[in-house]
Image (cartoon, rainbow, N blue to C red; front, side):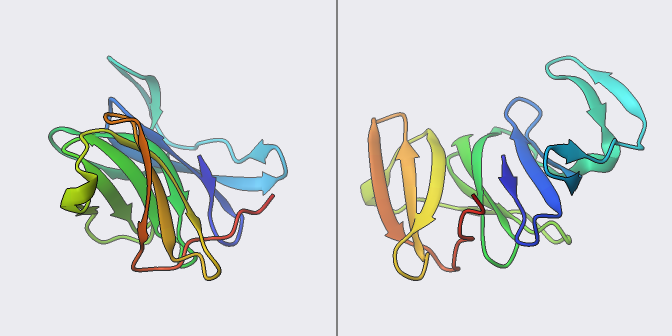
Amino acid sequence: MGLGPDEEWLYWAETKTRQVRRLRVLSPGRLEPSTGVTVSTLSEGPTHWDSLVVGLPGAQELDSLAVQADGAICVGTLVDPGITVVHPAGGPAVLWTLPAAFADDKPTNLCFGGDDLTNAYIVLSGTGRVVACPWPAAGLALAF
């Protein structure tokens, strides 16, 4: 889960449905109820379609996420591994492939650090490593 830069949206990723979702934050600890149609999915239960940011095809299972300063959402992506970058305002999702030295099929968690928040720290759960690499955009400083 992660908050957007203006703390107006709460984002989360769902592994088996391969979806990134969001709900508007009304006040601390209070989210706007979904107004969309609720349907049942086999693996995750109720789905609120109006909360959908993106759904990914194929073998791109999603894990933990972090948000960039520009509002883009970066999600650890399993199976077809890397970091998927999604822009909530629209546009294609882009899979950022890990450098060969960091080869791992299970990049799970990530966060941003360094003086200007342009280093990505990524947990590679397949090989049990935490790696740091330059990131092409500044990460969002943690709100709390």
